[in-house]
Image 1 (cartoon, helix red, strand yellow):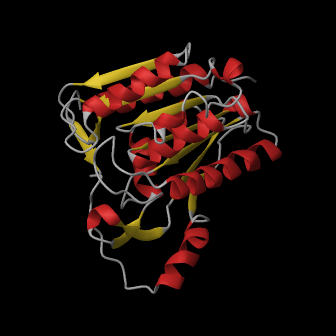
Image 2 (spheres, one colour):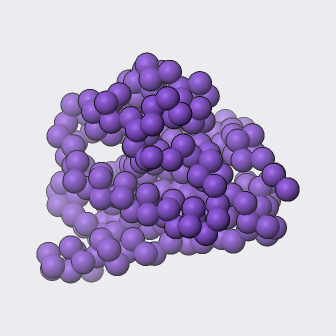
Amino acid sequence: MGNSCSTLWPLNICLKPPETSQSEEESSFSRRMTDSLVISSNEKHTATIIFLHGLGDVGASWHDVFDKYRIAKSVPYAKFIFPTAPIQKVTLNLGMSMTTWFDIHGLDPNVKEDQDGIEKSCMFLSNLIEEEIKNGILSERIMVGGFSMGGAVALYTALTSPHTLGGVIALSTWLPLASTFPQALVSGDNKVDLPIIQCHGAQDPLVQLRWARMTERIIKAMDFKHYTFNEYSDMGHSSCGREIKDVSSFIVQHLPNID
């Protein structure tokens, strides 16, 4: 596949699900948050990877990508969780309802952010992490990640979690509520060992490269020891084969077999 883009999930994709009332939409958040595609490990379960999709997408889409590149086969001891976000109205898309982790008001780093929505999704991801820990998986064996807004939730959750996780996969994304850092960083002295891979397309017209580079500067300023930024010159707001192979290598490196 080389450098060509294999899959595309635009940030501002417009879906048109059946009409719902406001009360139904409010209850949708907790209901749809339970819709996760879970792939069990093929060997003794010693690691978990949780990956969040972008706006208007579903968890199964990213399972298909991971499956195509045989990522699960490279870490047969890992369980994979691909949640689907609730259906909510999105201001950016003229109030249309679609799967989203939080509301988006615009495509600019300085635009108003949906802090309540971001924190609600952060709580959801944190609960998934706590459930894995309760089931015997060490926090440093739990990796979180996501594409676009899903990556934003993953980054924010990992940096504000009381646990130091096994890694963060941040694809075509940014750090939300960036002005709250470094004060918002929890367990900062231990967090600097958190591995982070941030991947971004130079041709991204939605989450522009300059926005991603702002996130890079913020993370580097917090002295993370295992942070990598990969730029793909021919990639837009999408994913490509070279990027997914880099992600696969990151997973294998930071979640090795411990048996």
